[in-house]
View 1: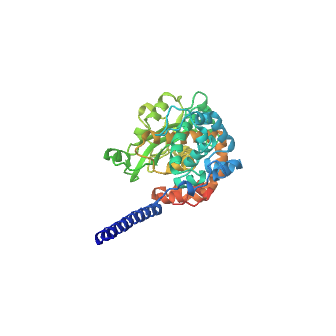
View 2: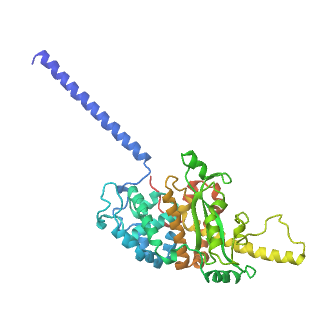
View 3: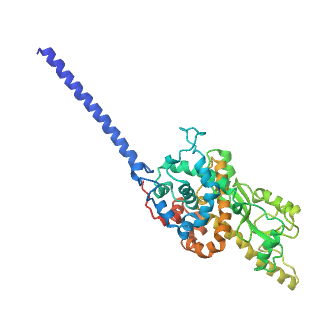
Length: 420
């Protein structure tokens, strides 16, 4: 071999070595990037979950237990009411409606064999989601689903659950009619004899929402009194614990008088003479057209009659009014306590999704009140929830979002560590 050929051969070997070094460097850099992404990844992948979502998952164990206590603790409903939702149209809708996906034909037939959950699993997933404030990683572990599947299933299932609840009589949100006013008043008078004509209690509720990047929306949802972003809602509760009126998803900056206008219309046009709603002293009582249709307790410093007998009668009436008005607080607490998702800031960019989420929770509240029994839940199960959560209810405005999730009742029931 000539010296020139020898030099060419050495150059080729050096080129191969250099190329190898470059390739090795690229592979090593790629491996390091993957390692960094893995360390910072906050979601689970299929190898990190149980192998089959339909076998031996925490959800499957819970569902197979048929324990009313377990069902109520994690989903808010006993076994019979859970099955009632399934058979009232939920299973039919789940089995006959394709799940929207960008890579599939939305008009095609659903492939039930390709779904990770059956209808019971889907209902269990959405009720776990609504009943808790736990992060999605916990739901992924309970149901053995990857993040995209959890998100897609929840969005799809909320829609068909709302459609199902709208067809169930016990889940209706409707104003009282005819003799129902007298029946509601009879329940109240049995405990508060002076409240002749009272038929319901009402109050406003602020639910947290994310901060918008749009200055107009950000300003509309900001509540200067609470120094946070909210959506305003007004609810009226019958003495049976059922919500008979719900004005939902109004901007948090709105005054209660503006939010409550649809309620004023019901009081004016659909309420017999002599009947009234009991509210808080801060609740606006509307104009003269509904005078006397909203009664509130006496305000501090309010002038009292000079006649001792009139004053004593007014104070007795006020005491019973204050006592019954507390039922609105119980109703609000039951709504937020049962549906932990309402304590998590809602998506500011999805107005329809927020409205649907709140409506689903209200209808589920009514269904539970009638089918499960509001007295049973308050006397038996609510003390269990309250014992550990008193500081959550009374210090909600000052709590960090992480604390709300850490104290979540459903997450504690499953006792699963979050993997990140």
